[in-house]
Image 1 (spheres, helix red, strand yellow):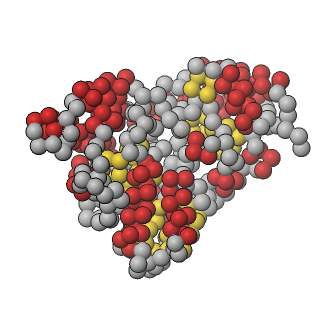
Image 2 (image 1 turned 45 degrees about the vertical axis):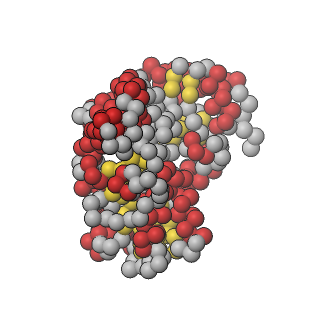
Image 3 (image 1 turned 180 degrees about the vertical axis):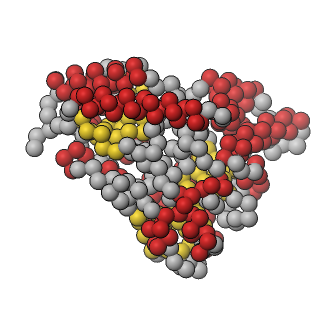
Length: 376
């Protein structure tokens, strides 16, 4: 098997799997006052400290969620609940993940003015462009760190620094799912009030994530109930999944730069092999080497994807959340219409090798010689 769909999800690492089992054995409810509850709470809070340290935050600023979708929904609807009666503008990008884009679409339906900034010809959105879209009526700016379809890295820190200097009351949110433990950043350098994190993109189990809430920032709870997570996110915490999340972060800590260089090398080899093929276009090379968008000219993405799957090679045609629908994000990054039906997203893990790329390219060459071409 050659697995190159790591932007969709990653295979849980052994450390995470072992930690999940430990969390299952520590079965007490972390809210219970007896010794079994205290044991579970202590174990859980140890993971909170690990995750906080990885982004340069305080443990009290990390709140566990069911995943980045819940984290982003909490951030966006929370900002609206806190300021939506007084302010009405939201600034975001045109290439956000659906877990950010769709909540903002909902707020637009409720009467918010939404400004969506598109990448320029270099695939960037300048900090000044973001600042220029903000005014005194702005309640929220939400901007992703790494685009999940092409790997573009945005200067979130630069944009948020300008915004906070001129409009300190504006809430800033960043979806860091594709950047967390892959490219170096800290909460201080990002300058975000709210940051969404996910477990299953970094070799932890599905169903667990976190929301960083900067100390001093107050947004109302999104989940109401028993008052867990200091009243911010009710619902009994999933200690096993949280343990897996913390273990995955611990396994990657101190290796971000090393893994980045290795991924950059493998991406370079992918680009070289695409160039040798002649029938493959590299659509975009962004700041994150973990994600590369290519188009196999004349072959429909879905057909090629299933051809590769039969060879034991797994890729995607875009965001996993799109479920095969044509991506508007690709258009925003100025991929020509004639190539948009032929897009493959190749996304790496820390274990991806040049041999994996050779297997992919060999299978694509075979497909080019056997599959029907797109009719013009």
